[in-house]
Length: 433
Ligand code: PXL
Image: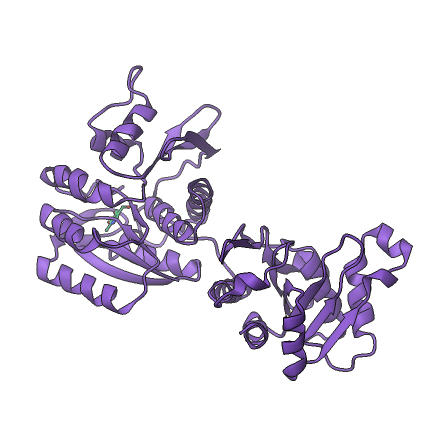
């Protein structure tokens, strides 16, 4: 997945396009950038701003738009009217989801947009937004309304939506009991998503929020799922913020291990395989990767949701978590016990066509018969472990594929095993292509 961040350069890398490239990498996406302005700032103070010329702005945009398939665009700092109008001319024809983060002021006090450009921002940038993510302060400025007993947050959101944004998410609405909520106005529904308030002054959380939002939206998540994902990512980035300079802390996204980033990359690759939806079983697909020497499924990373079929496409539901998969992780655990070099697995739909392709390729293949499962095993709910153990009993080298043809009320299934997620994907490509 390729994501484009259009915004200002922040040399402290806490916010702006530098922060977005970091976030996009965390998600396993490739980050492209178009710089609108260069700021001089650090964690204590905000210095100069120089907007780039219309010529180089246009040239940057054309460079990325003509070369890359861009899955989503985030617009942050735009600074002046010339930049706003140039962006509009280049972006209005595109059919790519756009998240607009209407940044007005930095935490350290810098003005990120000229006052006289706000009108053009409302006219040209807001209508580009699939989702706009102002905080309470930004929402008040854009709507020219102040929250009070008469003016509700909903009224403000509706006014911004009238300016042309499809969905409006106003962040940081303080509630009771140390809770903080995001107010969401979709086309016709409204709701709030609440979370714990974290009191810490930091640099970058707004950028982290909107970067996560465009990643989720580009992955075809619903608005509600995207808000939850963005909120969780931003909250974690605040919790993990680090003191790098002498001033305020810089947000830092959750530390991800190599296992996580390798599996994320392979999942992104998997969902892009042509017609892969035909290989997703009724009970959906999980893709797992184990830590060295796993003791239980808690040592195995998998999706808390699944890779699910949505029409002729597949989408990823849930996040990568240790213990996220039960069945595929159990199968891997059993195989890894006998063949410690096998660390990854994925389940696919059982189809005769796939089985013939597996047989034609030089893969090692095994199977088990669920109908032979002893009653005590069935009652303990340990069918998978029993079946896989049986399937590899006579094997001296690890099988690439283990399948079963189902049982009463049980869907037949194919599991592909590999040393790494990359290696597993290679095998998947051979038998699904
Ligand atoms: O967090 C908003 C923001 C966005 N873009 C740039 C910034 C800031 C805040 O400082 O500097 C370039």
